[in-house]
Amino acid sequence: MGIVSPGFQGRPRSSAPDLPPGQYLTEDFPVLSAGPTPRVSLDTWEFVLTGETGAEYRWSWDELMGLPQDTPTVDLHCVTRWSKLGTTWQGVSLDTLLDGVDTGARYALAHSYGGYTTNLPLDDLRGGRAWVVHTYDGGPLPAEHGGPARLLVPHLYLWKSAKWVHGIRLLADDRPGFWETAGYHDYGDPWREQRYQGD
Image (cartoon, rainbow, N blue to C red):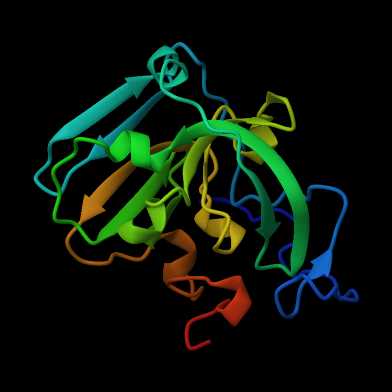
């Protein structure tokens, strides 16, 4: 996966009462990535949802833009201890993408252009809690923050919101992704400080 960008150690700061334990408030938007930033053309970009049977559902960029769009405003919490409050996005709910998909899967593995993966319970992608987002703060999502599109699962630590998302594979059994294999928590609830395995 290449090098890890600076910043993964976090910085001690005072926390605010509305933040999860161990977090500090930031006004900027730190850039933390594993490996180089992929540059994906909108002409070739696609999102692929793969069922546990191997059935595939595909959306081109134009097809994604043609789906119903949501504009969630959410707080972000990074495992490196910073939190950014009230961020505004635009994208397509996973509820929309999963609509009509017949599945008995309990888990999902998100995968990105560049090879990054992260695992999530499928229930955490449903119920208006997860999106494939392409717009941040009124403009196209910058590549360093995961553009042209990233997964957004704001109730979990930000590493679960895979940058440069390319697809999701539905699974009957849980399968750890990149950071989970390296010792990060399988679930990653910031309010329970689930940073690492055993937390």
